[in-house]
Amino acid sequence: MSGDNKTIKEPLLLREKEVAELVGVSPRTWRDWRAGGKIPPSYKIGKSRFWKTAEIMQWIELDMPNIERFIAYQAGKKGKHL
Image (cartoon, rainbow, N blue to C red):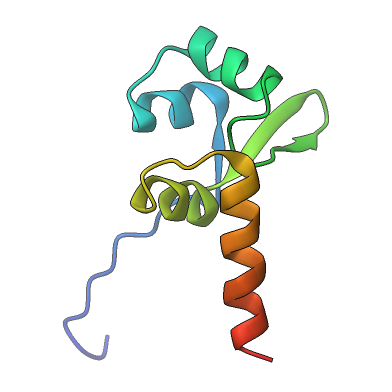
């Protein structure tokens, strides 16, 4: 094995219960926020919904802005790399 780098791998996707816990709210509150369009978009796989860990972490770092501001931030950030 080369190097002593030990990285903790985060899951790429989070389930509703996991993301609600990470944010510090109940799954019910998370569902309410989703219904109100207040959180980053989810991805449906089979019958389950998932959120990208990276998007949720970025959303938290930005102090959980409303979805319009979050999308605008993401669009602006992507535009800077072009």
